[in-house]
Image (cartoon, rainbow, N blue to C red; front, side, top):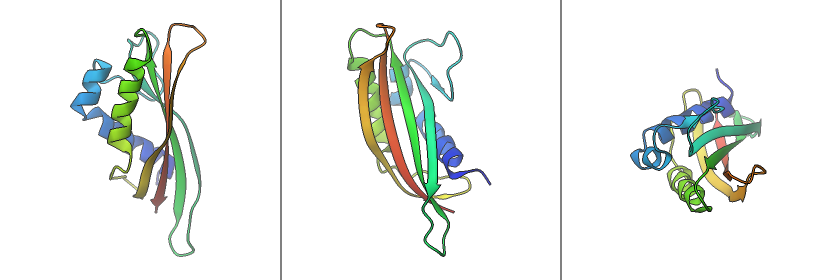
Length: 134
């Protein structure tokens, strides 16, 4: 059985890759669990995750956090925010099917866009929180 965090990550990636609007905003299926060198902008990476116990005595459960990162080289923050907006609309309270767990709740908890230290890249961050059983 996969940890709930890995199970959720796989379900999120699968849901994002089949969304034609998101893929169009990214210019292709540029969704990575760590971007390869030379990846064309914009793209999305699945970042840090965390899991803690959320069991209730009878049913095992977990509280899971997943962070998504949007990387853009377009002038200004519009492109990064547009992609983040699509991610939020797709994932906030989404009903995803996980392989080894049951998703109880998925929420977009935090989003921001900031200029990366290189001065060229806009970096969008979306933090997701989930409750899972199983």
